[in-house]
Image (tube, rainbow, N blue to C red):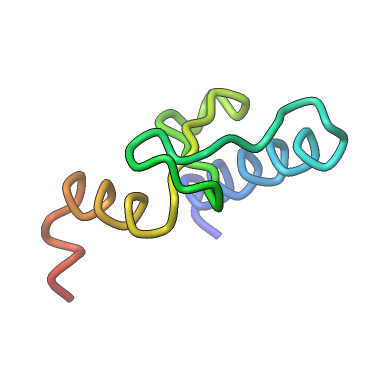
Length: 72
């Protein structure tokens, strides 16, 4: 694993532990209101700073952030 991959993995793991323990609550997508949402971390140095997005909105956000990666 690269240092960046390790940081992202640790951040996701930390947030999932808090979710399982009930310290953070799942919320609907901030864009469309879909109840089935997943975590998005705008900053991997802040694992509890979470934005809730449904899968299509999450993929669209990443496509906007990384246009070169979405074309492959």
